[in-house]
Amino acid sequence: MKNFQLQRDNHGNIQSIQTPLKEQALLNNPFLNKGNAFSEKEREVFQLKNLLPSTKENLEQQVEAAYQEFKQQPDTLSQYIYLHHLHEKNVTLYFHLVQKYLKEMMPIVYTPTVGDAIRQYSHALKDTKGIILSYENKNKLEEILKPFLEKDIDLILLTDSSAILGIGDQGVGGIHICIGKLAVYTLCAGIDPSRVLPIALDVGTNNEALLNDPAYVGWRHPRIEGKEYDDFIDAFVSCVRKYLPKVFLHWEDFDKNVARKNLNRYRHQMCTFNDDMQGTGMITLASILSAVSILEQKLSQQRIVFFGAGTAATGIADQLVDMMVKEGLSLQEARSHIWIIGKRGLLTTRLEGLADFQQIYSRDADQTKIWEVKNPDRIQLLEVVQHVHPTILIGCSTVSGAFTEEVIKCMAGSASHPIILPLSNPTSNAEAVPEDLIRWTNGKALIATGSPFSPVVYENKTYVISQCNNAYVFPGLGLGILAAKASRVTDNMLYAACTALVKYKETHAASDHALLPNMLHIREISLCIARAVIQQAIDDNVTEKEIDIEKRIREVSWEAKYYPLVCEE
Image (cartoon, rainbow, N blue to C red; front, side, top):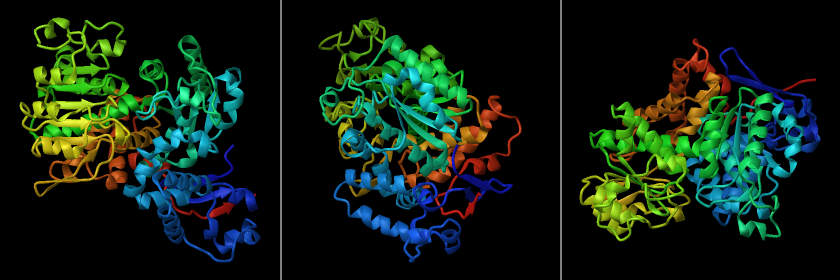
């Protein structure tokens, strides 16, 4: 059991923390440790006087000292490692620091720097707290998990590390994407960091560099597949549901061949969500709805081309199709507005071996046989743009520079304000950079990117580049789910989150043509999303009918401050 308890008042606000821990055990607990900020009374009650220097600091003084140390780090990976070790030592100080310098530190604790940390896991960061569950221990799952699942856990963030951030299979290093995402839940929505659990499933790796690295600490075995994999996932989920039947399970960075299957298998049995599919779809839909609103158009009037045909692309396509259906189109009509290009070219009925989720977007080969193309079996991006005349171009390919000047100028020739979203992470994998997109379209493009980019100045006008970052939506969604104690995550709850973000942006735009609001308002944004999600959960009958929404939100919220400690004898 957890060795401390938050004490809340009748309105749900935290008043104090009760714990039986004393002396070094208290200092070693990162959720309770205050460093030199323990009060005189706390030092006496918890027997800390001989363990701390006499000088006392407050939280703000500690934050500024930590910030100076952060700034002294030689590069972004070193900054990540510094913050990681701070998190392992003092959770409150870590979150207060990052919250204060959110714009500067979000790219460090999350994308893109977390990708570097994942690569360096076995060399520099293998002391990470969290669970790495190896397939080798498949017969001991419950024995291993039980001590963790018997704690007060509201949210589990799970990966099998097979498709990390556009850098692919990273073996056990994927535990850091779980840690990073959970930090974002807390930073952006105030989720209690003591009630979350990061878990990486080590089912082997197909990354030859890892398998040949003497320092690699994961299971040196090719990834298990098929029935063995499915049975392992099922055993894990069954164990979780046994001990935590109401937990919110977040799937992260699973390969396209299993991501959709895993979600569909369990989404009607428990409260679960896949951020790569649903979260990416939500934030992209919100960005596009914002763009078409600026143009005073509807989504169902657009022609949409995807470059990339994996989990993210098809997940986004699903969300766009559902929205077009809400606008009045039939399912078939909505899908006819979408063209998807994979590694073998445009998805058509001529291609064999397409996954089920790709087949529904494959174009009838008869539609393209009249096109003038080099190879009808491998129709390329430029050829699609030339014949389709898209109004929206979305990149989910991880192919750097794929959106060439020729492609963009061709698109801009028929779309007066092309909507262009190069979403691939990290920055080095972006299909195009905003500066080029603005220059090639004479400042007409409406842009959102997957990675953060600085504003662009073109012809004396400054263009703020919105980052199409899942952090805009999944923290608020999670806050709403936990506050509602929802039994399921419905499609309507996802759309409620998306719509709440768009409404917020309409009154809080970062600049004239920015597609999303300023990330510095993320706590307020998350609250707006949470309220909408709770109300939709009520409407969808996946929670109680009568809920005091504001009180429920306070009851699951946490703030990075030092609360008074009360000794539990």
